Image (tube, rainbow, N blue to C red; front, side, top):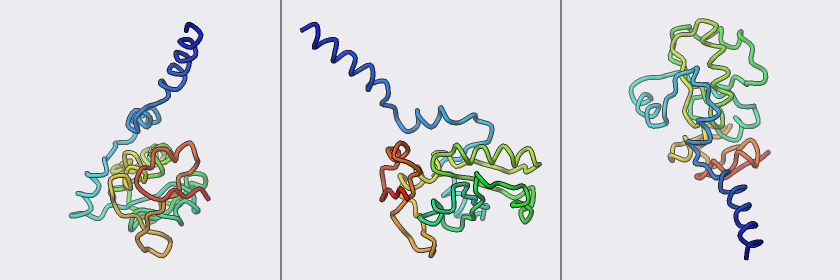
Length: 164
């Protein structure tokens, strides 16, 4: 009995502590250096305004799906000249899979003097989990979302998970 208890105790300590909610997990990723907007706030803004949406994921992730109207500026290949066509006072909403990469780009934009920069809370995963539309490389609605890796894929609950 004691050995069974020990095994169960170790199991719950090991795996029970790893079970976190999406919000708990991504909040640990954020430094809170870029203002966050929740999906519902972005949806509401887009009804009356035309913010610039920037996807900071890789081209292969973007090709699978992205927010309608988004432009790609890759995190791994970011160059300040990528932003030359955007005024420093334009409203910019950045996103990636969950918000980590986009927050890093947001920090760079703020350092460059951009004044109206936001990070989409939860990224494209939360966007899709909230049943919002994403489009593919042909600008057609899709349920597919590139999930970056198997580890991150657990946070996409609504959509078809694509790994490559």
